[in-house]
Length: 190
Image (cartoon, rainbow, N blue to C red; front, top):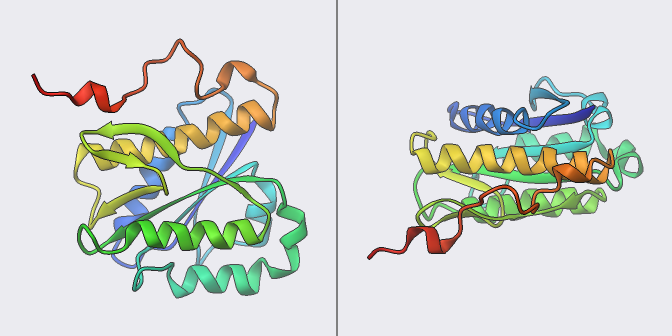
């Protein structure tokens, strides 16, 4: 059974909405259990429990929120060796496009790499000009279908990687040929 944790901080509720879409995407993979935890309610046991972790934070001056940083500094510090090799990804929302969401995702990924997580980005498109190379990103609430789908794709991809590499379910490999994935060519006008 895949065990996916969606850990998030959300001041306005926008990242919380994104977390719901990430969880929805993870649940698309068979035999996947998902836990959603706000960083204020999360414990080290939640991170130790999971095979895969999606971490979401509001963009705070181009980096992760102080609450999320405090969680890793204080709650998880004594457990760093215990999470080495788990799979993880990131997502973030800012007040507007160009607000630093990808930088915030990179700061989340940097924290995760320091704990030994294997991190990834997504090459698949969720809409015209919308990819999640550093993680799923959005401006304010995830109202746009492309942002919602980016979150779902991120969660699904996390669950697929865990199914494949943690549980040996090779049929769940994200790049198998029987599934149509969106590419830039799908959006060519003409």
